[in-house]
Amino acid sequence: MGNFQFDWQAMISSIPHLLEGIPYTLLISGVGLVFGFVLGIVFGLLSINPIRLLRWPAIAYIEVFRGTPVLVQVLFIFYGLPEVLGGPIDALTAGIAAIALNSGAYISEIVRGGVQSIDKGQREAGLSLGLSRLDTFRYVIWPQALRRMIPPLGNQAIVSIKDTSLFAVIGVGELVRQGQIYIATTFNALEVYLMVAILYLVITLTLSAILRGLERSGLVGQ
Amino acid sequence: MADPIVEMKDVNKYFGSHHVLKDINLEVVPGEKIVVIGASGSGKSTLIRCVNGLEPFQGGRIVVDGHPLEPGNTSKTSRSLQAIRREVGMVFQQFNLFPHRTVLKNIMLAPMRVRKVGRNQAEETARRLLDRVGIGNQADKFPTQLSGGQQQRVAIARALAMDPRVMLFDEPTSALDPEMIGEVLDVMRELAAEGMTMMVVTHEMGFAREVADRVIYIHEGQIVEQGPPAEVFDNPQSERTKAFLSRVLKH
Image 1 (spheres, rainbow over the protein chains, first blue to last red):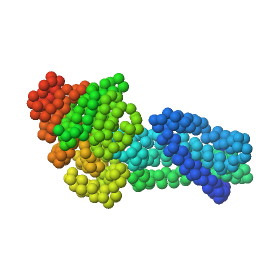
Image 2 (image 1 turned 180 degrees about the vertical axis):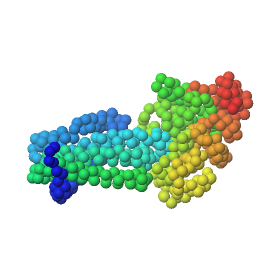
Image 3 (image 1 turned 45 degrees about the vertical axis):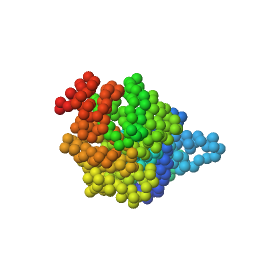
Image 4 (image 1 turned 60 degrees about the vertical axis):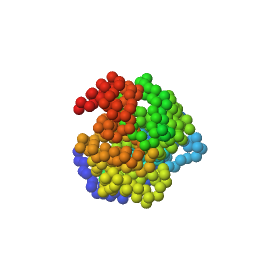
């Protein structure tokens, strides 16, 4: 320990540099999660399809991308895939793809759980009224399932935002990467990483607040 | 006698190895009110759930309003199912209202999506039906804001909005507090008086005696006895019917 002194000044002056990373963090997680949501709906619904030929590939996707680390996935996409494609993939695209595929697997399970949690009487009521199976799903099951999915979806969004910090290793200029670059010149690791942590917390707390408001507003699932 | 609107011929159903319905033969003519009674687990709910295809069956044939249902998942059967469900309304023990839609929108959904009725006309019909079941002032509430009896009356209005030719009631008062049973039975009595064809599974023997044209007693998946309520209740022929009635009428 000895004569360590916390350098407030270093912490404050790191902020402008770190803020340059936030657009990348938000872009990768935001776009990645939008694609992940689409993948999650598609594969989540396929995973409860009675037709085996549709169900099995969906379950395989979920198990593979949920069962391997997102860091390995992004390394595979960024360093591995170009060998097959014959051209490089830029780091931003690789990061977005990794978040999309990884969150998509988790969101598939959220979708499956949400849909299966709806009482079977709801489906029977829809069908008994003459609604088609598609309309029964669209107007009766899905709105109720979506509402129940908000808390776990919010959870997944927070996990994915934090996962983007791993992408510093492929050189995306996100929050952690900006911190590393700054520390390389100033050597204030403690102060800068503390600031990095605080900025993640600001993002995730903001998201939590928005989601709570959304849940309370009752706008979802009407 | 008029042609039957519901016809079940040698219907057999299994849940796995459990034989739930055994050689059910039943014809219901338009305007007839059938009350199905029996112990729990006797197959009475399963029987009426077969009529609108909520339960598949493994043997025999069901024809509803000219549309045939047969075992197996053929395209002909699935076309029949769509047609039958448009013409047959169903009321469930647990109401099964859509909790995310207002009372009004619960009722408007099927006419708009299935019959392609315009919004204004659907709303007009919905309000008229709510008045008819005595809760016109609850139209904009959500189902959970209503009492059980009110919810079940909404469920009846929702089924009626499709202008069905047959109404199925699957223990419509069994989930209700005692003081709310009467208001639901009153709506059903009115419906019966207007000539609706009804198949009702219930434990309300008073209602059966008063409203039914025919009472059917089911035991272990078989129709053991059927006839006008006065005969079945006052002069049952089968020992099983006698035993069942002595148990339920004692209370």
